Amino acid sequence: MIDLNGKEFKQTSVAIFNNGEAGAVKNVGMVIEKKEPTDPGNRPDYKVIFSDEIGSINQGFYYFTPNPQDAPDRQKTRETQEVSRVLHLARAVMGTDYAFPAVETSKQAYDVLFDLISKNTADKRFNVFVTYGTLSRPNKKGYLGVRYFDFIEPVDSTPSRLRVKPQDLMHRVDPDAPKAEGTDSTTSESWI
Image 1 (spheres, rainbow, N blue to C red):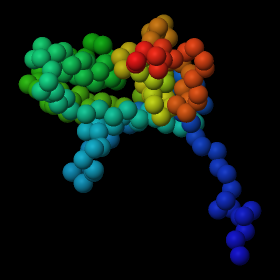
Image 2: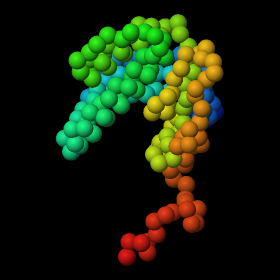
Image 3: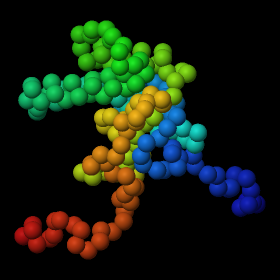
Image 4: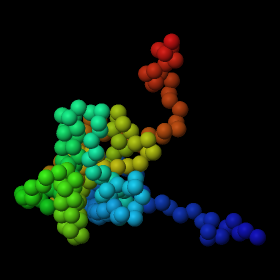
């Protein structure tokens, strides 16, 4: 006999970061996880976990891998952008006046910066800015995530720099929802 009213069938509430609301989230904790040799190959090299009093979200950071189809200057730009994201995170932890050590490669930059971040976050709190992606690239699964740039600051930052930007998607998009008539820019006639 199966008791359908038993505790194994009780619905439990799911802890959702910031109640599922996009925008600035204050007083957030942060933990860094580094990929271990025993972890699956597709796991990010570093994972940053942001937690509020309700739930948590995470952001994966992968070592830069050049795309052989990109021009060398495009590859260098992308590599610099990826390191800049981690440096932005490190500055929120270490302060804007901290003198970071010189490094030789972007991989070494990740390792040095995430080591500093990991060792210095235990008792610190932050404000982060979360969205459902951008207008041009919504999160296809409908999850909150930190913005690509300008996503973190120390909790005591006054005034806060974390504001809505024109491309921020501030509401969840239901990927299965039918499109309203007239909102699809591509019609079958344009393919004829």
